[in-house]
Image (cartoon, rainbow, N blue to C red; front, top):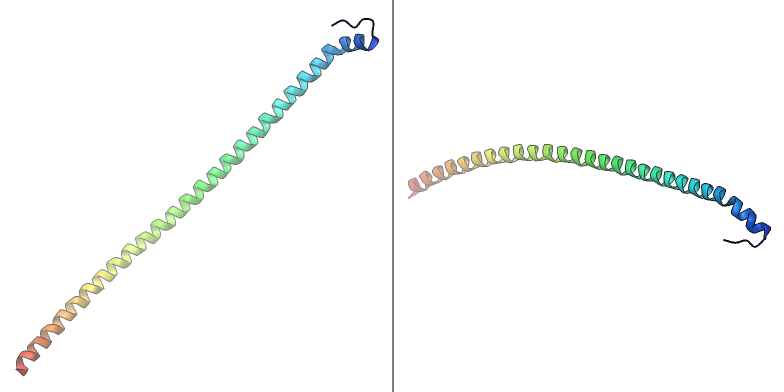
Length: 103
């Protein structure tokens, strides 16, 4: 680029290398800043993922314990229903005997 004797043009040409270095440094600083922000975002994501996984695992344990208690309760209710069924059958037998005597 010809400056045609313009002093400002001569100064600009003399400072071109320095300005290029400053621009390169600024770009490097910007890239470093962006890499740091990416690392922070990755760390936040990893922590949130870990927290969500821990919460899901704890919830699954609670649900497993609840399911086990429910199975025990169902077994107890089935046993009680069998006892009641047996008692009803015995009472029906007594009723049948009494009805047979009454006839």
